[in-house]
Image (cartoon, rainbow, N blue to C red; front, side, top):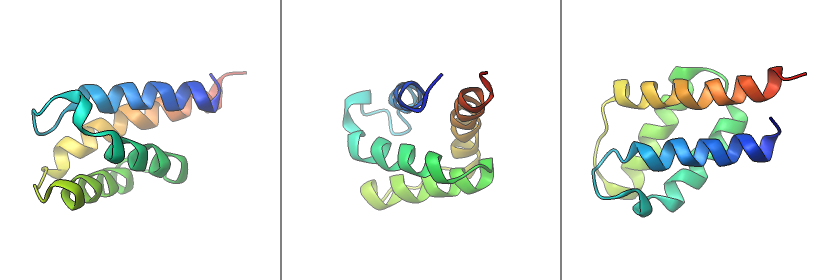
Length: 86
């Protein structure tokens, strides 16, 4: 899997997440920021904190860190899958 495929899959994971139950088409800016952070971060807690901050900044609503950790593991699994394919 190349980086562009990883990014497409990451976008799909984030679209399906819908933490505020407002519909998956309402998070384009947040998803773009999260995917950018995915390129930089390798630890689930670090990525989860970034996800929490991104969504809080845009909506002024708080998401429990545990929920963000769950999605961060899914995203990082994609990243490691992309790195490990020979």
